[in-house]
Length: 122
Image (cartoon, rainbow, N blue to C red):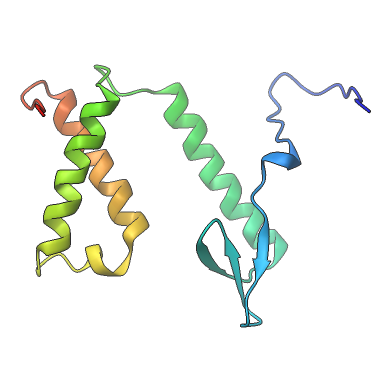
């Protein structure tokens, strides 16, 4: 059964079906979501964090890199950067925070390619 709801043109509507399932772990204060462990937060704290990330996503959608870059080249270059960082002893974040490293490698690859001075060949 489908229902219609009027929302403000500025509203962001998220279908609950798009939300990842949250699984309990054997630890009372740790939850599992999409292969990542998260500390149990108060609902207000978790919502605040989610809204900050949603703001970041909305900004990224509204402000694509200038000039646009080839996403296949971004991924290829990011793999090279991650590979280097994973073997570099002086870059400890590669071993401690894989998600942060992935984001930084992709952002660096995107910035390098946007300069027009770097190209990727396979």
